[in-house]
Image (cartoon, rainbow, N blue to C red):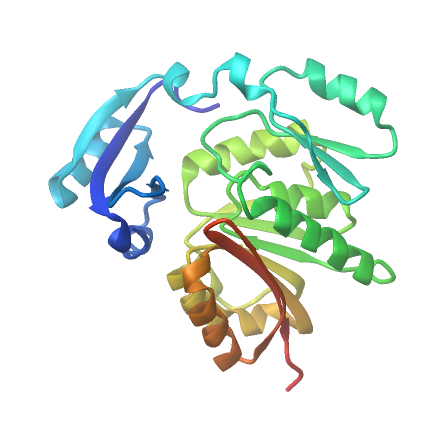
Length: 291
């Protein structure tokens, strides 16, 4: 279970420097959240810590401020949380309600669809982010392409593990999720249990360090929900982990960073198959070119 109280470190930052600052914090082993508003020149970096000591250390190292955050402050209010289900092709409904009652009602009303339930919390990527739904649709399409043979999925920066859980229900085996934020990982394990996907393997690790070890297998699909700067570091490390003509589903890339991200992918021998821009965010599909 997650702690009753968190401690939030926060620091204001010019909008143009937010992504670079977040990437630096990731390299230091943190899980930063970036918040900004259209038209505003400054945004905010947030990190939720399970102990005051961890938050105070961030304060000493980087400045900013620390606040105690009880669960009712960061959980979505029940009256605001029951958003409309997100439809993923003709296969899934993704729901974020606090109560399981609407989920059971949806399952009864839609026996032809798999209903996935992600109660709102601190694990990000529950289907309502601008690119998460796109990634889910790309994953369904790829699963249909691979349905005639066994296939496997590696989910980097797994967050809520929504892609790993969906991959499990699409027939991927094995499924591995890698997430370095312990709070997100704890929540994702609960989500996996809630959605009948306890067979997936969820690992607490830094993606860069984890990819540096000797691969245990090559995966047909790698999902990478990472900042563009981190993706550029991950691309060359992925080849030993990716099947000969494997695919990469990427997201978490600002639209303005998409050309540079695709350029880095091309340099590493990946060919863009599809890109989707929604608002300021982008996602896409890459194919490993045959050697």
